[in-house]
Length: 365
Image 1 (cartoon, rainbow, N blue to C red):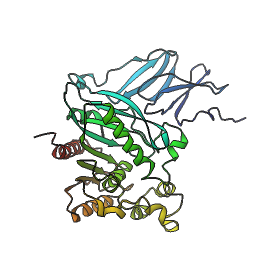
Image 2: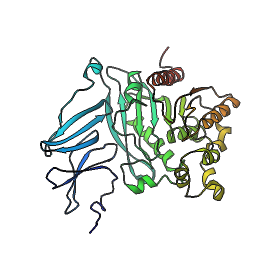
Image 3: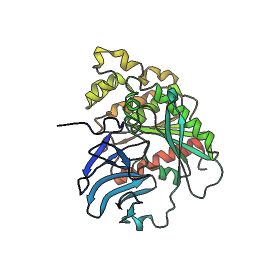
């Protein structure tokens, strides 16, 4: 007999492992910006959370307890041991030497009422030892089925922006994961609708709650869907930001429908049809239709080996900016795909992005 154990639990399981005694199933699943370990009773289907903050992966049940890797916004991966429901014991300090002498920023989570009154979560990252109001880096995640989650990454690392003197804010929005399937699916046919409303409400909530954020000196930045939203901000939120950083963002939904290697995804997002069967579904939220309103300085970044959102989208958006005499800069990585992964390219990426933000926020003389 086959039956669904967690049908009533509205979260998406990422990994599954049996406990050594076979009495429970251990899973990981996102939950409002965290990815903890959960225990599932195979008899009743009852779900219990076993860990708190952090992003857990590589769960391995052993006779001594559960071993897993865990990271956070301020700590790269290490291995931990969990016995029962106690506090995880750290087993390794892989990056101790590299991190010696580095003070990580503080991270504060907050919630706000988003589109339709739904509760949405975000976080604010504050550098250590900095006083006064800080310019804002407003980071928008990609996916769009993803999350600004509490996890470490060498790309788009919030701690790097805090280290450069910025107060970083990131919020989830309709389409994000970790809030249930209906919330995630709410972005379908609505790329520029509820997500934009959430992002506006989220930034307003953050600047109201955290007095150290200088909302008048804010730059927005995002990649992939986040890059699309940067192009959307240009026309739909044109007077809010001092500058924008757009990486691998959709500029023309029509061209994207025929260029991307991920055909199913793009069609599903816009109603489940090819472009030629329902052009209106794609054109409703198409940034290219509103170029006449663009005016915010933008840094455009793309990779020549990006087949997800081909680099021609970035070149086209840069051309639009140049034709409108909007201050703009184009950065192309010849060997990059949809992600900048080479260490030397990453160093250049951070330098260009932070330099662009410094220029327009006045963060550096």
